[in-house]
Image (tube, rainbow, N blue to C red; front, top):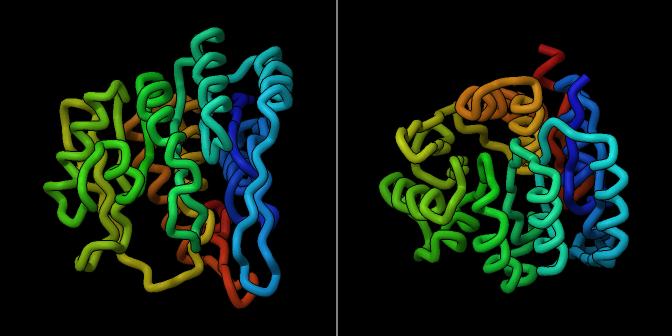
Length: 264
């Protein structure tokens, strides 16, 4: 069985973060291991997020445990500090990890401010050059590419080119349902070819964890031997099914259903 690593935060509600990653890994028949960078709790009355970063020495001990076993692919998610970003980059280089998915998490869903602006600079400089593929949403792509808010497909292409120029081997920008199209549009770019990925737009708010799930599905597919383009395309199908069958958790959030694709 292939082995995968997620270097990411813990979502106490179970829909995103390492919880989403592990569920997704399981659905793809890969063995998932976790190095927890942050713990995210929510206030029951408002669902406001409370993010606590894990000390970098503890994160390193987790990584050393996992990397002593060996992995076939890894992903990053919420990284709680610049020091953790530096640590992740260091370990990727030291261990020669070839298949790396960078999900450049900058905000928690339901929040609208960058958690730690200095992290964006560190991700841009240290992690993007190590990425097999990075999976920003429109906001994250504009931040990485240092552009104004992205509003058109042409601007998505411009951002994708800038991100690849920063060193990422490929990028998939998640446009989702932001544009006034009938389809949810993502854009894949590998430095040579732009590929527009379209799926029927789903009118639902039960999509908590979709971004984490998408990146974890790509990671799993890469570990299982798919090309980057194949890994991304299959991951989009997986997430579309998961969002289609998302459900209400409480009055504030509804997660995707990670088992939906394999239950079709």
